[in-house]
Length: 580
Image (cartoon, rainbow, N blue to C red; front, side, top):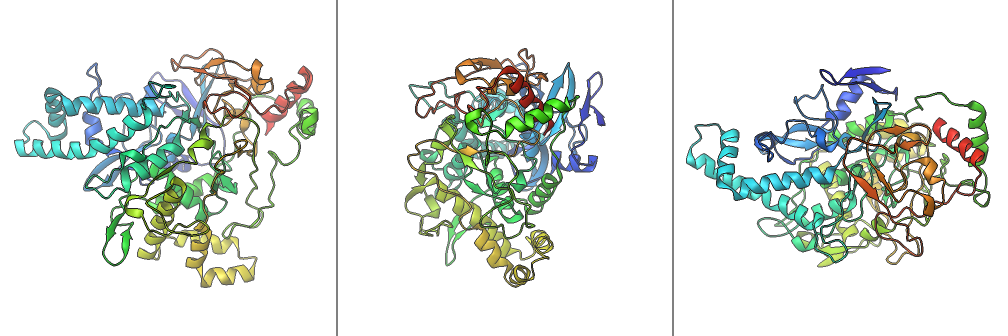
């Protein structure tokens, strides 16, 4: 195992061999992808109520992991400093949400690419509260300005800082106030996501439609921002590049580098990548004049993800039980097994991906197993289209965006045009994808010839219909049934993280825990979260209204496979799942 000491007196973190070098890991932890959250000087100057610096513990109190090799000392895994508008900005990259650390008998074990146990919501709510004090308290602003500008700053410099701060803060405060604290009878204080969950889909929709496409000076359309009340567990990302569908409801096409870029562009928009489309004479809408997407960085991250291997079980395995569990796993569903066409590797993908090596893409079934419907409901939202009204929608039947349209169409247009216009502006931008594509298709002369002659058309055709529209009134929400490699390291389970262990998932929903503590302490016997946790003071309270579609975001219902097995059979099945 590779090892890293996290600091004086800290327990030594052990890293599993997942196919990466230390250089790969360093890059994944701090590779810029284009997010621009807040000027770095500002957050370094920001104080907590007790007078300590907001950044003093590297966000460790929210579960983010120390990164001793960070190019910017003090920033945790997944955070970095990146340039924008003449200064350095705090930025996020995908490892912030997709790096897991568990504790086995108090010893920390790093799972690269695993679902992070971080409290994203509390971090940004606390940031908003702290910046609110800067905005409303003159004495606090004076201290803030002194830390940012220095003791001898002129009044004009301080006034400019005040105006810059006000302009930055308005959209930042608006999205978190409206998305996280909506006043509804059901949730008067909003829904607490808790560690390990986030409503990323709502936040992407809210960010693009609510902050970026307005035609006013501040670009906002606050009415487009809706409650982010459908949190799900962060997915694991090993094998993510191979899936032919992605996002929990499976609405995003995936499986080659072109589609992977589109997937990642949407993710950057959700974590404050700069995107400011505007209407200009002759060409209509300009998408690239103020766009912070780091395309080379995104392509590098995708290359790293493709190299990442699932984590191997860190303990011993009973091979006889593994074999027995393997057989049970393949039993038909009526006998308690998963049955065919659920979680196995299946390379029959139709249509095949244009730039993937044949047989490399895995079919990802999108199935209804009677689980929570909250995230699915998010996908049916609509919004005002702002400056994008009249733009062509890159989804069949390729109509024009109306004054108010499906949020899916707005996002698809934004992602498609950001990539397409950037590629036209810089013809060499997608060269790494082109070269990888040529290498992957070298065994198929006919496809290779078309590719070399018409790569721009291949990109355009691939990106068209990058999203699958959900049913307006689904009879049952459908979610990904992913290949189970490394599943032991991804607790809690189900798409909304409502079941703490695999052993609990093999129980009928009424017998699964009504509530459980969330944290890094791991239970190897039951495969998942240990009952006693000390990291977070958070208890996840679940529901079990299993009739009809439960849209609470906390339902532990559904996925009843294996629940009727006897104790011996369940033990064997767990041993097999550990081995994957």
